[in-house]
Image (tube, rainbow, N blue to C red):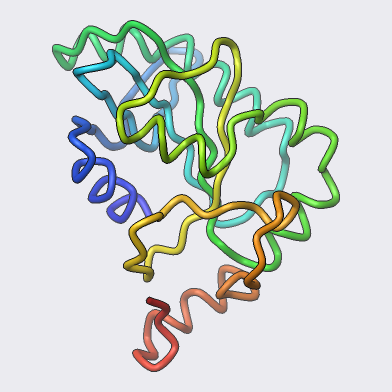
Length: 178
């Protein structure tokens, strides 16, 4: 999933870094993908998840990573003006169900959704003090690679039942999505 996100972000003129170390001796962590759009000064702190086990833990991690992201970006020679945390989920029915069961928390904590996130990646500005959420299908070649959540009105079902189904699909070229 990381390679897919990095490839897509780079095609939108963003500089990227994967597995960026943040924190110190007692609370070390790694940002999955850090993406910087130099024209707008926008920094995306991206957490990739194949499954949601603990939404609160994801929110805490994104908050901590965002606080550390400016220093990490400066170490990479980037000069960000603004940053936001982004949760990119594997496009699966299991994740759709988990999002639906946590809808109030998702609506409150992740106000930027797929369409607006796509605009931000393309060079738009981030609304202040909010996070983004979208789904991705690493096997898809669709131009709009940030997919809406089911609760946001996506019409087509997710291409995979769960993470295991995604892994099976990787080995079966007939099941790869377009």
